[in-house]
Length: 290
Image (cartoon, rainbow, N blue to C red):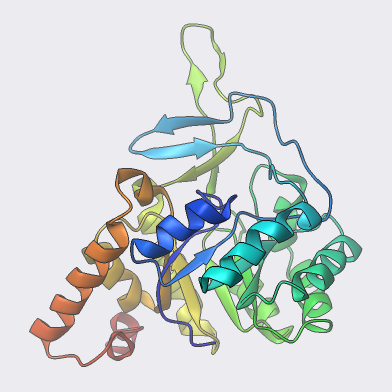
């Protein structure tokens, strides 16, 4: 699998094949599903989402129907020829191994391991290099497709976590997941979200994502898939210059599904005007020029 292009990020609009098909028809090169576990999961009590400073704060709680119930949706994607990456999670290594084994029968392009959702019990995996290594290694040992590790900016040293994932055999790292945060209702004087804390996405976290991609790109030899607040072609160019080979787009789709086409066109025109022949010419150029 070549890691390039502009993908739908996991977590937004990724629960039915029909919605994912609309995203692909609007220019997404790959769609990443919502994170799927082995068992159905109800998620957190509401409210589960609120706006904040130009972004979204959510505490959905990994709501999903379970891998068995999701198979029919993914079978439709295969039938329609839509390339997809399956995002999976597990509370234990045994859990994620079971999900990965079932995922193999669905023939995804790759598996994205959600090791870092900030409002679920799995959030701590990608804070620990040893746990990250063990989860990635366990899945790599039983699948023959590429495996990506999704990392969190909430870790004290994301580079150490990325290096652990690479050592375990990850084919790429995805940086970043949402940033842990909260809001308080000043009238009722209580936290807005039912889970109290959640994960912030959208434009407010773009500089954080960019810094993480920059640091990881300098330290790792595997590709970096950048995600976090990308909404314009200028953001995408910055993310490539920081070191991202491919870019995932999430919250920005709420402003219009044509975001993928707009970003592709803008990046293409930038490359042409600046005399570059392809995106690969500018990946990591910001630190290679130092």
